[in-house]
Length: 447
Image (cartoon, rainbow, N blue to C red; front, top):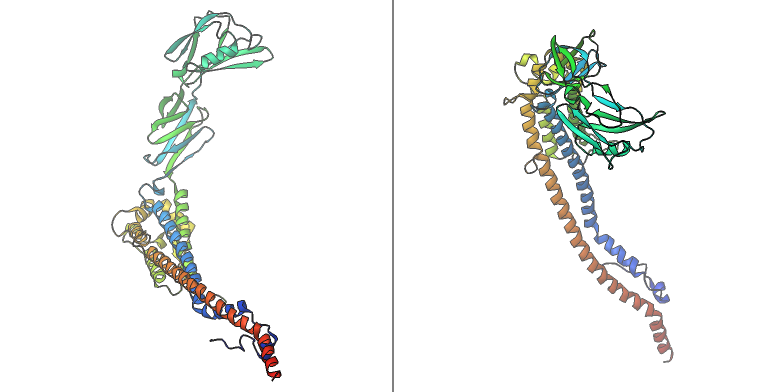
């Protein structure tokens, strides 16, 4: 046996006492010594898991960076957004679609579109029986005869009856101290929804409370009308929301590029880039314990860092002076991260918008947007990307180690059983030793 009796705490005294040995402790001691390779593999598993976590985090970061760049470089991205402002938002507001032209317009609202309505004189209650008869209700060009009979001869029933038909009105019952009234409100604003009640042969007395009138307004001095208070077509690509009428107050509506949204997109792009660069930097930073990150020795990480620093430093020619990120206030720091000078960026967007847009959006090969997009697409490719290759290799190594450990554990289980059987026999022999010694001594004493 490779383990001596001394190591098993067995001596002449203990043997003569028949105390035996602790089989489990002896076997555990041997198995622990033989598990040395497995402990090394398990530590390798921990390292691989740490590396996988970092690689996946970096991969997510690069994907996020790609999304933020896409917002700036895509032809239908944030540079396509337009913002509108109103000098009198209590009277008119506006929204612009991507096909609208930038510019300033003057709007004067003289009348808002109104909704036509009728009401009846009050009767005792909404359940009071009505006189049978009919009346004609016209909503715009549509005219219908409504008959009151035994099926609908209360205001409650008549309201339900009208609402169940497509008469172009919304019916309701209004109750107050004087009793109950039938109210009819057109579903269409402006003159197309103007209501008329005629040929009334019922006991109800109808009163017109509002005419259906079109909105009346001017845009840059041109008189216009709209059946609703949401006017389209007057300014191509722009929707005007008419909220109040004041013929003596001209409202200035401005349509311009949404520089606030672009500024936010630039800051989001910079934040996403800094997240990736800081993640890479942390792997090469030595901690107080004297150790660097799990990927400090990974050559792919160096390649990723080099690629990103090269891409972010890329410049183009001419372009009205906007040739690189620094020319619009986006500067690189010593650690490779970026900062944004908001004043300089705002100045570039205000006074050199087309050049900034061209820098990010140009489809010409060699532009910043095209170059960085191509590089990120290569890095994030699920089949050939740098990070994907490392993640796949890491996963393969983890599977290999797991298989190796499982096989080793299976062999150790057989080894444990063998040793348990072997030392159980030794234990049994030691426990029988005093009896054998007594028998021998007795036999020697009789001679």
